[in-house]
Length: 117
Image (cartoon, rainbow, N blue to C red; front, side, top):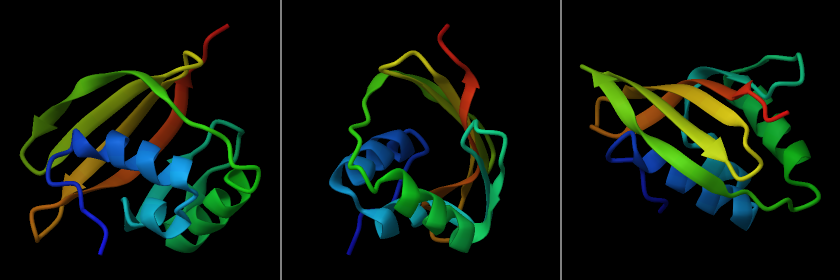
């Protein structure tokens, strides 16, 4: 059984571990069923089926992911804003929601709200 994010700050670490392991199911488990993902290519991915298909395609060549900096989550009740800067300088922004079991999942994920030029 995969570990769940017990804190919104866990999500980025789990994302990196699972992406680098090629664990598509593990990545999908980080998202709510109706989550929205914007990979920054002009197309928005909605729902777990589309998110799964996106990650299958993204990981086909086994890219390596690394984070340069993760900002502390900004929490308000059951919502949290998470953000990190990737090793290539792109800045991400995500909204996570606390689940009924106390774990956290992303409901909105924007891969690159700012790109390094």
